[in-house]
Image 1 (cartoon, rainbow, N blue to C red):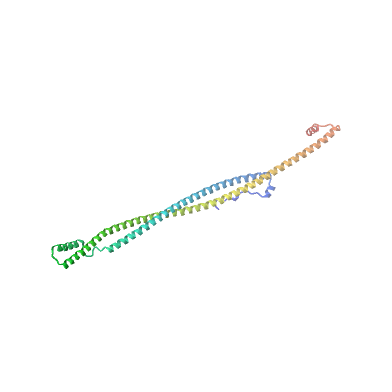
Image 2 (cartoon, one colour):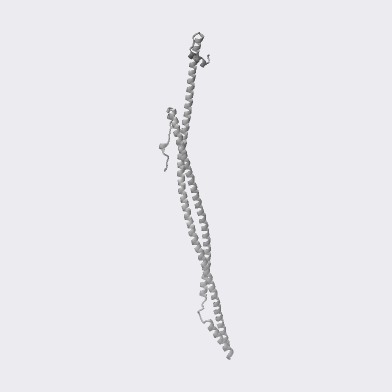
Length: 296
């Protein structure tokens, strides 16, 4: 792991060290443990801060990816709406174009005589009927011809009317197809935009994963530093405890030494006092010893 703890800077202590090292050595060792513990705690704090920053960046990237996901889904919904509308319009346009083709097949305006020619022929026949003397059979035949031509004339006129309707149908079909094309263009544009958001989402998630890996690695480094700091603190506490024990032992030894000294002084003073009672002359030093022990 990069930026690992420099093990050579760590300070360690064994149970044997606690029992065998002098008080001065232990005081020095306690200072080293304290300083190294503080350094490691500082290192752990910095690593925790870096880890937290990386975790915050991860959350930002995840939020960014989620934004792109939501936008992509919204656009895909719009794509679906435009697809459905496009398909509906294309179906409608297809029906209209089929109707146009059917009408074109049904309309044969070029077949037979044109309207003007039929009108002239009818007019000539009617004039003949009005101006010539015909027997009953000839007149009936003439009337039948006139009626037949009138029927053909009306059929031609009806087809002309239908031709206008054909143009309307064809124009409508083209208009509907154009609208379908507009929706198809929307499908293409929105799908491209949705794909861009999808790609951005994937990239944001990838970056989030990379940053999360960094955060996890930094957390491991934090734990490493914190555990080392805790170990140094525990050892520091052990040394402090041992120093207190040594202080207590020193105090006890000093107390015992004082008591022994006092006992010896008291015994000596009692001997001097006994001599004094027996009439011996005491010098100044002896008198001071008696005063010190309270016998005088």
